[in-house]
Length: 363
Image 1 (cartoon, rainbow, N blue to C red):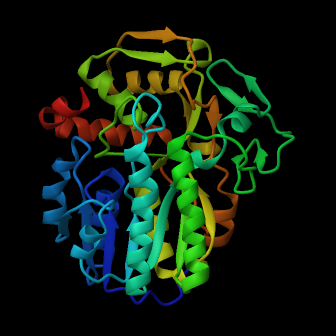
Image 2: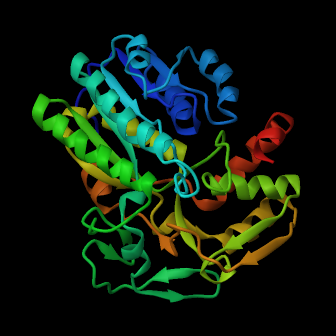
Image 3: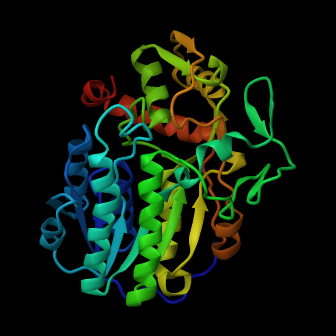
């Protein structure tokens, strides 16, 4: 990565969703890299397993505030800040399909607006963790692809701007439906840019692919890589769902440690990078299909489990998604370092180390 420009004048960082997977890992990593900076983690502890991160935060010297970004007074209770790292979200793509959309809308859109208001009042910078899910489902699924033995793969020539065999770039068209999760994150991006323009704030948007690693409490609707490893460890069944039920769907993976390296760089270069939007993922080199992931889990864990097939497509599901990191690499020099096998091995080692505590959460 490129050299920093002398460091950022940051004394206090507020991390929303700070007891969640991404928030807690970034909080601890930032605290270690920037020991003179006060780090505050705000979280409502709604997601099961987030309570397991509280001792980790405490041991790292991080201040925890039990609060909800839907309530502006909870953000106020965190005190003054110089930078907000907005990691909070209802992360399920299926949110709102079978029940009320209120929680996903109020958390992912209204909550971000509350964070932006806090940033405006304090003159704080903001790093916003968005998602690759801002790109419309039908347009992504309509891309030219080929079916290989163990995965779907993008063809080199695509008729859509921002699409190539490298994956999806920031120029990909945004017209169309994408799920309420993706829509609320895209709306938050738009409002963030208005705040930067209207109030002179500094901010960056990172559209992340599949983030994963130790301390992610994986479930069927979010955190699939941890779910896959955990089911192999605990001997529970899995299903290949949709697109023929063969497990050929592909995603690129980004280890949270690789995201941390980028975030630390962006904190140092916030003035220079402000206003930019980056696709941030594992890219084609750190991608895997579900059936490839199954084989890798068998090798790493030594276990085989029952895997059934359900060919029925789910709402908002994608045949394949790969982040094209060309822009972020060109601007910052950053690129992911941890490959798929390393990611699976790290998750496996973490589950074994905390097996009994995680059994109730991951099964």
